[in-house]
Amino acid sequence: MKESTFNPAQQEKDISSKIVVGLERVSEVFKILLWEKAKLVGLSPIQIQILIFVAFHRQDLCNVSHLAKEFNLTKPTISDAIKALDQKGLINKDFSTSDNRSYLISLSKKGTAMVSQTNDFSAPLQKQLGGFSPTELESLFGTLSQLIYKLNRNGILSVQRTCFGCTFYQKNKDSDYCNLLKKKLHRKEIRLDCPEFEPRM
Image (tube, rainbow, N blue to C red):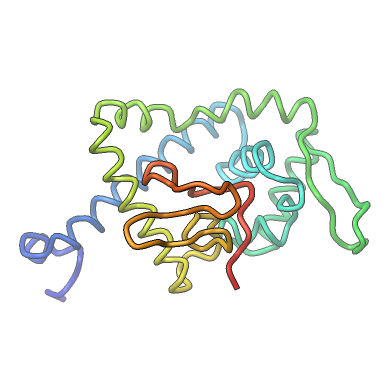
C-alpha cells in the first residue's frame, strides 16, 4: 500500500501526487459550498447544478441524455432530479421535438428566480482566486485547460466544450487560433465552455 498518491511519503517526492491531492481538496470545497447552498434553498446539489446549466446553455443541450453526460450521472438519476424540479414549478418541459419520448428543459419564472439565488454558491472560491496576480491566474488556467482536455481525450471526462477539442481550433507553431472568430487566441482567451463549440471529428 506504500505506492499511493495519498501517501504523504510519496507526495514528498512526487509533485504530481501533491497536485492530485490539492485538486481533491479544491473539489471538496466546491461540494461543501454547493451543499450549503442546497440546504439553504431546499434543493439537492444536482438540482441546483441542473438549473444553473439550463440557465446558461443552449436549449438543445438541456435534455436528459445530455445532462446525464454533463454531470456523469445515469439517466434515471437525472430524470428523478428533473421530476422534482418540475414538481416544484422550477422548470418547463418542451415535448415538441422530433422524438416524442424526449423533451427539452427550460426555466420557469420561479426557476429563473431560484438561479439568481443559487448561482453564486462558488463565490467564496472565486474570491480567493482574486488574491492571485494576473500572471499566476493565467498560468493556472493554462494548466487546468490542458488537463481538462487530456482527461476528456482519455475518456475520463465525458463532456467538454474547450477550444482544444473544437473543429474551429488550430494550433500554430507558437500560438492558438480560432477559425470561427478568425483570430489568434491568447492563453486566457481559451474557452472551457464555448457556446459555439463543435467537436472535432
